[in-house]
Image (cartoon, rainbow, N blue to C red; front, side, top):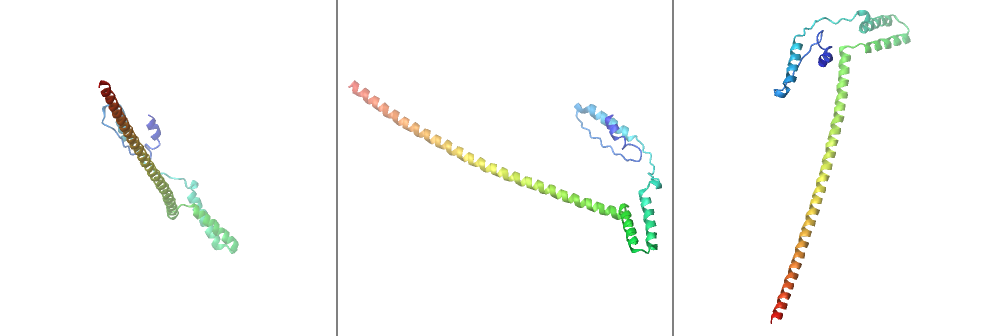
Length: 190
């Protein structure tokens, strides 16, 4: 399968592999669950052939740098010329800086941790600024919403009041007209 091809370098040899199979108990995914469990079962049967990884000393940079540094240190002790001694010491220092030791690895890890902490602080600052900007925008929108609601409420109340006034004026005019018609009818019947 594609997953097996993807993981082939991690399976067997000196590598340790841990398979975590995530399955769900729903019937519609039964085919997927079956394939996952089959793959996990096959992976459980893989046996590692443990062997020690050895580097041929002739190809080892550590070994060649160490030998060269030792030779240079012997030359420094024998050398009389101060300029040549300084040059040899500089070369030894350069070689030593290329050799990974517990101290140099620790220094590198500290540097990486410091850079990571700086980047995390930058991300935190960006997220914090983004949240503050979002809050400010949200509060501005809330204020606009309140202003619009207040304006709409005031306008609707004014329209209702105006309509009631018009209705009242019309009712008064209608009552006046009815009175006039009654008077006109009374005067024509008399």
